[in-house]
Length: 84
Image (cartoon, rainbow, N blue to C red; front, side):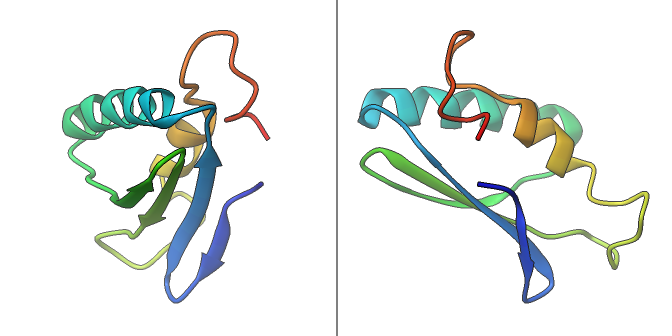
């Protein structure tokens, strides 16, 4: 699944094998978000994590830096669930 742009934000859901994998992925994203000072809105329900990303300024072609960073994130090095 690709990022979906609606309501002035980017949306994407990731599915994992279980709650532990989903939580581990979310922990890594949180650490990265803290480093880049961009804190996504998210929900976590069992094995699914859903993000809603907004920009501090209106989206432009050079904006939305979180999109590539999150699309490359994987819950573990061999994971294929996040690459879809």
